[in-house]
Length: 203
Image (tube, rainbow, N blue to C red; front, side, top):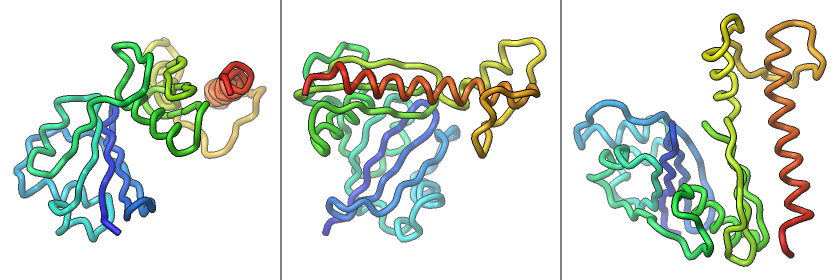
């Protein structure tokens, strides 16, 4: 089976997936590239956080890619990249992120319509579709963005990291109050959108 790579360049990171035919082999992620690269440096950089067997073979892979940050695409010029610039999705508004449109189309084709795509990154997005048509969606701050916003836009709240386990819903210290407030707000939002999709998306 032919090996190929899928790439989404998001708001803050690159998201890779390695496929052998239709079989997903591995996924990995890395931050945006922020310095000028020589062509010879690209393969080692991209493979440093991915499968080691890609190091010498990156130029031989077909890469299917979508980007929401155009300046980042310059780093892929030496490679064979098929840029996805549109989808057959109907009733898409002009500023809908191409990454959301592509993901919704792929989910609908893979799992059937109607479908709700929930994507957690810098932003948490909900994207719904039915019968190959965009129904609507929502955007809010992602997990780490919530923590950063509280630190940046309040006078006294400390910098807190997301917890490794669920915090108490009714917390009794500042750190746990922040963690619980953010975590349960996000979880409740996700549950609400899932419930609404079951009731409101056409079968």
